[in-house]
Length: 372
Image 1 (cartoon, rainbow, N blue to C red):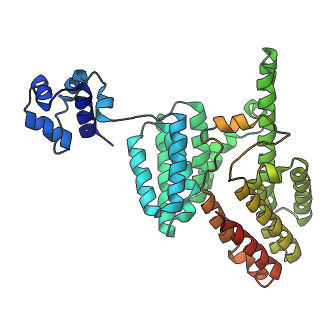
Image 2 (image 1 turned 90 degrees about the horizontal axis):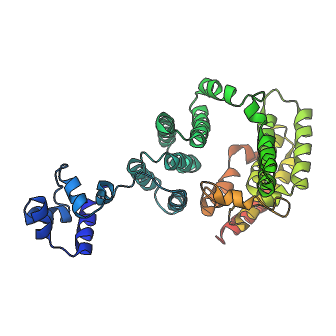
């Protein structure tokens, strides 16, 4: 958004000159300068460099145009907008984000975070049409980023975000064509974690080697749980294989204390296992998993929805702090609570509605949410 009138008045007052002095330097009337400062009119584009020279600033500074944001500014904007989604009308926040997209259309890391912000709050869209509109808008913005961004990390993240969107809008073949070569397990890139650790060691940077190794172990653990959830849902997975997978992931979660380390992924995992049990009408198993789901959500809210390490993963907090969004959650905790309650109201849980334990677990969740 151009802020010339405010900037012009501020610069003139800071310099201690009159509107008449500015007008005389530029070669216009005092009335013209007055109209520029009040926003009634805009100077000719050829005059802008003269004005910028007079006040010893760039044209961008004169206009108040900021083409890029730093990481801290992106973090702050993201979390402010996430809070606004919890407090304000969905359409109003979407409109504000679109204005920011236009203002920072060349700041591609910020645009990527806007895509993630929209994805993380798309469940607030009031209609199915609004959901589809936002999904297509995210895909469009990803295309813009990929057409202009040169930074490899931003490009790679954008490719993944775009794939997630395309999967939701029915473009699965396009996802396969992009990700199949990128994620091929036989590629050296996908087996190179240890190389960086060895490189750090080779030059005596043992702290970096230690921290990087911890972060990779942490990341692969979370990915293993995520992949297990997808694996269990496959229609050609046998019940025996599903149960074996669940048993092994349960052990992994217990061994690495992941229910404390990352309660969000534990909540998602137990929720998915509850649905899996309901597919087989194993109601007692489903209730046990809902109990674990509620425990994980409560833990998540108690942790203020922040990601963190623990006594074993003792050095990874610094990685989270240096991440694009820092350690704060991608959604306001009030929205986390509301979505967790809504998740228990989907049609699949109707068979449990008559069970007292199920109702008590929902009440426990609601009572925790009332303290937010």
